[in-house]
Length: 171
Length: 173
Image (cartoon, rainbow over all chains, first blue to last red; front, side, top):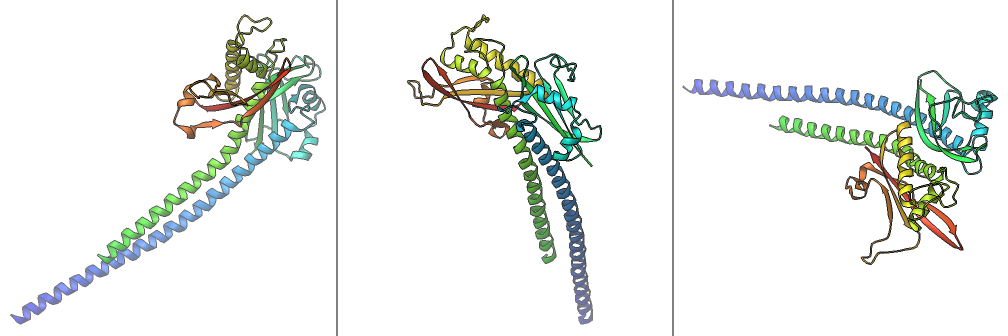
């Protein structure tokens, strides 16, 4: 009788010990999986941060170029309005290479005056009956933004509403 | 039991960690967009105000002249127009916003025009002229509205100089 009780007690003690061991084993497996998960997550986070940083750099560059074009005397008059005669001169002189010396390569700018129907590209011969100027036309993959601007029409001495689109090529 | 509570604790810590990361990621995107929307809204207001209307009348030459006319002399009829200033200003601003919306993105807009000096109604409300979507004024979803900086415009009419503060509020349609 005493033997049986002792045997039963030993058996239940073993089962308890096994259950505890299994719980700890599970905990260890969970902790290891969590650590691997965290490492993977941090790697992904770093990659995301690099992507975001890259995108922000491109956006900053785009904003910088746009603000420069809106205010620079080479493009705009004293009131920070884009001057159609200056824009036409830049197109006629094929000044993209010179401008790349200022802004770097891999960008484009497009100005469209909204006082005319449709889109008529400007050149010496088409001026002033035109409303679109494209500087450094890049065909590669790019991101771009549009900004509201004013276009000063020198011949008619009128101020028109316009859109400046600036884009930079993406790697 | 001890091991189970340990697991629960780890799950909570992981959940908090992931939540913080997601919030940080969201914030990083917002900061960059804010700079662009600020430039966009301020440029939109300035560009529309400086655009010529096509009238030679000094009171109606540019959109800002029309706005002045609509605020101080709303019944005035510009040379060559059949409508009074107030109506013409509303129509012109709407037209330019639509033209621009077709080129970029269509937006709901509200133009609020207030004098630089404090002028109030008998009820104590500041006298202002609003053009555009008035629902933007009452809308509670402030996070979706973008405010431009107030544009201060001065004009001499007769021998007096008048100053108006014009602000643009835009929101996605």
